[in-house]
Amino acid sequence: MSLETKVIEDIQTALENNGPHAAALITRKYLKDLDSIPLNIAVTGESGSGKSTFVNAFRGIDNRDESAAPTGVVETTMEPKAYPHPIYPNVTVWDLPGIGTTKFPADQYLKHIGFEKFDFFIIVSSDRFRENDVKLAKEIMILGKTFYFVRAKIDSNLISEEKSQKKYNKEKTLQKIKENCIQGLLCLL
Image 1 (cartoon, helix red, strand yellow):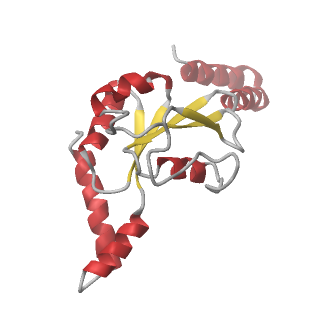
Image 2: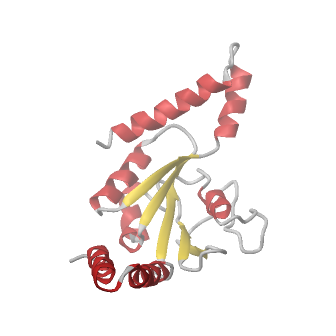
């Protein structure tokens, strides 16, 4: 029996035997316990995709802050690094090295990183949906875990598109980017 099923049964029993106040006490205790469960979120993707910047934004911290994940124009994250969330003490955001570099080849990446220790994943991509994005998503799914896909650096893509197109349309460009992400994710089904 799962924890959730047991809690629901306990709430139902308390409600039937002792009334709404007893059921509310059990519910409050369960919710309080949930707040103390550790949550490890892994931020992964290719090198240079904006993973560390995303980690900082997720934590509400400026890239120049002393407690920020280091960012740079060259490969910066060399080991998985934990960053506590400043508001939610049970949440840890992990900045992972980029997949597909000479230091972290795709075929060895998963073994080096140890994906099994994370609760869920955020795959950050800064360009078109790529083979490494698919590889990461498939491996995460094999582990039976959840991932979210974040398309970063869209502002740079919009600027480039505006400079290179005679008939630039921001909404159409954003729609093309969205459709590309959806097509990439559909190949996982």
